[in-house]
Image (tube, rainbow, N blue to C red; front, side, top):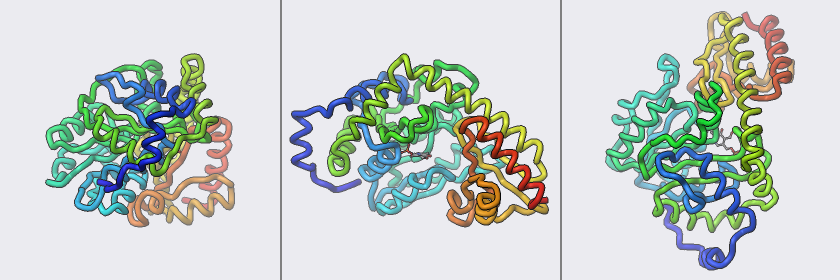
Length: 348
Ligand SMILES: Cc1ncc(COP(=O)(O)O)c(C=O)c1O
């Protein structure tokens, strides 16, 4: 855990001032987090510069030499490489294609050590019943449950069209849960840099707030105003509905594409989120995904992220690429046509 003294001047000023606007978002965004069971209030939330800022601040505050964490893998690299950079010992809890990338909770128990401080992962790709099992293990073993929730709005229920599910208070039932969220994915507002950390655990929250004094005086008030507007009831519902509709429509198009090219493409069909992890093969062998992405980009201007390089430490996930598919539907259609032309010319 970070050993840093309170930043005296920032702490002092915080007692007497309120950054205009920030409270609006802090009051509205708790309803967007998943700490169900107990209602969150503005006091349970710390506003940050994006989810990447929220993740960094939380990991920086909580972890250090002597700590051990279990981190779901593959995931956003920040979740395991920041703890490593802070001197923490990281065990990767590896997801397998044959299990549909659903984590096996028994393996988590095996990975937990005496000094395990936290479980780290993302929310959207993990089924709710598995999340509950993870929360139970975390509670029994007394470890912090950290969940990056940027994709939570794109959950399975939401994509099935149950528009109110994000407001439902489901119960993970564990106080030492810390979640981070942002205006980027579900609200399609990645251009503004407003994110948050939320927890019901006051000790954790105060530690994070104290560390925050060293890297965030406030978020941009302009960004904050836009976030407050987007989260207002009249705007939030149609904005999220638009993004969910795009996700549903585009997921179907992508599925058709993968089904139509099943000798070249294989995947675990995503049930949540906005990205797919697709393996491409040529002559029955996984392509070199880095070369494939570069060549595809050069020849067609279609952009994918190579899986082995971006998510597999240049070792795992050969032939996989990450495809972001929740763009304008017409853009996806054009991209898939170009990809089809490329496949026909260069892969067999
Ligand atoms: C899982 C996950 N967490 C956090 C982030 C950070 O994003 P931002 O701060 O732009 O929301 C990203 C960005 O793609 C992400 O995929």
